[in-house]
Image 1: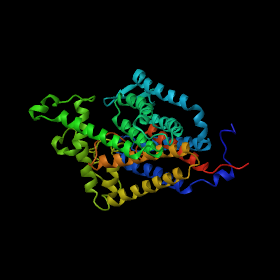
Image 2 (image 1 turned 180 degrees about the vertical axis):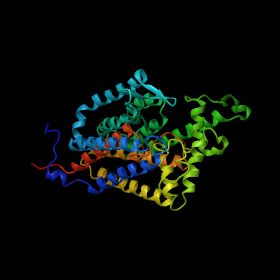
Image 3 (image 1 turned 60 degrees about the vertical axis):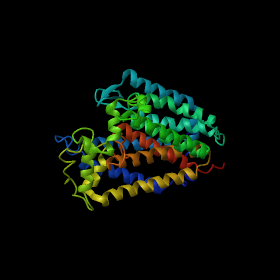
Image 4 (image 1 turned 90 degrees about the vertical axis):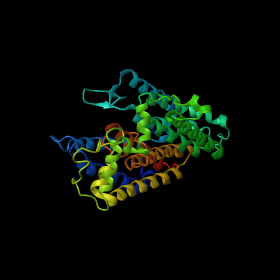
Length: 392
């Protein structure tokens, strides 16, 4: 066991205490914000979600400590076992998962406890893809070199997309892009490929929704896509949410009203109307940032974003100081995941991005998400602790 968990005084000197401090500040912010955001969700037990989130945080800290104590390089031995476990869990969702709100994403463990494998899939893919790319660093110059890395990530992505869980699918894409660039993918060729892909998706969406195309394009009108119309509408309604005020645009409009009404200082702790009166949907999970804006105003949202900024900057510092490509790529995957989560969640609650159901990391209520986030923190700390080789 000592060969796996080596943490002595020399190793602990590498610990980034500022990163740890801001992690704990974000966790404390989660409990504080939930104490107002969830009070109206279960009026019979107003602090229920705060208590449960506390359990998730405490157990998550334990997970982070264990992963930090384990030398991250040891995971390379088990890369294919981890990749196989990842696929097995995602297949298990299809076979044994239960549905909620139109999606099958959870595997029931007990009558009152379920896990969401797609959350842990992000950690598994970061570890295994980091090893996959570490052996190809400097060998990603041509288009054909991108094929195997893409297929490596595509398989679990498709299983998650089938659930359907578009938000996590997009997180996988962000992880893939970030890690590929750091692994040395030719920026012009890889960037051009990504730009081309975005253009193709944009054209496909335009053709799907188009109604009055000229004769020579009439054949492409209503182009079929691998998504239901209601799913596509949810992705595009942010452009004009007022077009469906009582339907898919309702979430966005309520969020905008909540954030806008907070003005500079906010309405005050537990004084919001959109959240406390339950006009704002999912205000303890996906739309928790809207509660911050309503009750604590611009000052509150900027303070929270400042905490995230320092957290990400310290994470980047850890990546830059990693002792090997594998450690740097693990840190890059975690940074890509956290950054994408933050940008998309804040963007969707602010009405400038589609509503994809991506929670605010370390803040939103949720067990699997909190465990996944804290596991990511543990991996970063493991890389940080071992940024210099021990001398014996």
